[in-house]
Length: 196
Image (cartoon, rainbow, N blue to C red; front, side, top):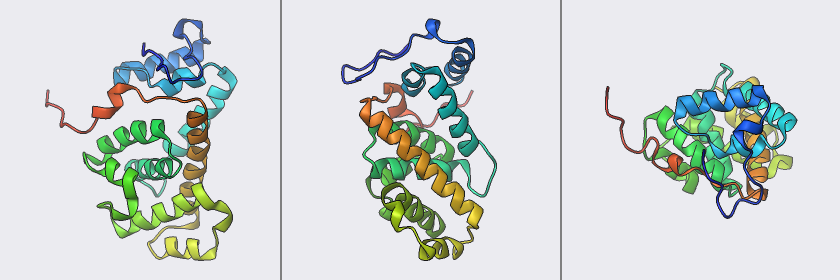
């Protein structure tokens, strides 16, 4: 198991003390990735909240829609950077690098998505997402029109906005709890894996 950083305000849950369903989910993640992302053990401290969080996460991030897996992760990285969330930028930056097979993309988006090597369509998507994450009261018809001009539907806009809003919650919880990224995340997707 990963040790909690000295900066972590709340202790990580102990795997052997968790309800079976949550423990099984965490073990499955560990078997797939080789480690347990700290977010699982941090949120597992409160089982009901953990279940609700990951149910909504999975509904947004795993459902097939007009956004690719990589584009969903772009939203997470860009909005998490706008919210100064170290954990989400590092963890989802790793996932983004893997999905896009691009070792540079996460750093570009986290630093300044407007200068990143992305398509105009993806730039419009991130403009909308960052506005939802940072200034949602200002979202209006012109923002939807900008998405429509790039082929996004109103349902796509909902997905973009929902991901941005969900991760705004996640960013705030991670920041409040001083959640630190697992060291494993930093190198994922930066160096091509050797073919087996």
